[in-house]
Structures are given as structure tokens and as C-alpha cells.
Length: 113
Length: 110
Image 1 (spheres, helix red, strand yellow):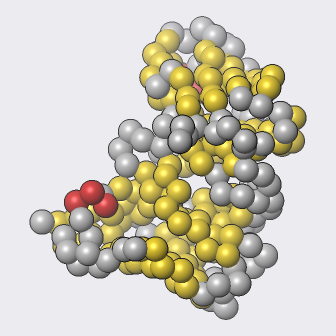
Image 2: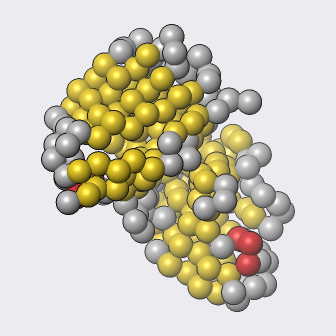
């Protein structure tokens, strides 16, 4: 069975550029999460979607970050403009529904120079 | 606020049992989780336990839950080199939000 699929796996770009991270959740899962992982802050929940609707975006750091879920099988996380402090591993996770275990993708390792 | 605490490191000999401990503060948690993260990889759901259980066993893994003391442990029997990873404990704070521990790095000595 295919798990959560994220692309790209690695992204290196210069400060000020737009970055788009992509996620395909597990088929049939109706909850989707974007996380950021850093050594200093650990795992942080950025945004949570349920049935393609953003429910909680209180973890989105600032207006430079935006996320969309146009349909049940695709989500994007966009950073514009990017800054060096955005360098981190970004994970997408999905679950069958509220309260169900979350299943993670392999992450996108983002480096902003 | 709610918090989950774990030791940062655990070192065990290959073949011995590993016991990774976790304490949490939210007494209303319904599920508690163990995730495994290998270098460069995502978080793999290892196992989880419902709060009305006190033990769950799955092959080499045993989860013990002491709800009174808010203490969760993960025992890995016959630890192998492939078990080297960071192990995260998490509790569900709401019906979607998880509170995560900082992770315990399991180091296997030959």
C-alpha cells in the first residue's frame, strides 16, 4: 500500500525564492497535517486540514507561509519569500479521521541559503 | 501547558532489552503513541495504546501504561542494530493535535 508521498525529498534554494512542497495523503484518509521539524524546536504542527478544509492554522509561522488542499489527494505548502530560518525538514501526515493515528511521509529537507 | 518528557539517550547492548520511558501531563488523553524515526526518514508509527488499557504487546514490542502516574514505556526485546533510531512518545491533546516528546535516541552497542 502506498504511504504518504512527499516531493521533493530535498530542496536547496536561495533566500527570497518561492518554495512549494507537495503531499499526497493515503487514499481514504480525510485528515492531513503539515509539520516542521528542527533540532531547536522539535516537531511543530503548522496546519491541519479535515475534509480538505483548513481547521487549525495557528502553527503557521507568518504570512510568508500558506497551505492549500484543493482535493482529497493533494496538498501544498508554500513559502514566499523564503528565508534561511525556514531551513528544516517538513513532514506531511494523514489519518483516517479525527483522533486516528497519523501516518507520516518521508519529509522534504529544505535548505535556504 | 501540556507536556511530554523523555530521556534524550539510551544505550543498550545488542540482544538485551531496551526500555524507553515517557511521562505526560494531560490526563484526558485517549491515545498514546510510539513513533520511530531513522536517520533521514519520516516518523514511522510503531504502536499505540488506548488509555483504558494498561498493556499492549506486538511481537518484540511491549507498551506499558500507568495512567495513575502518567507514565508510558516501550520495551523492545532482543534489541538489534536495526532498532537504532530516535523514538518519540506522543499523546493526543485533542481530536487532532498531538503533544510530542523530544525523542529518545537508542544507541546499540555490539
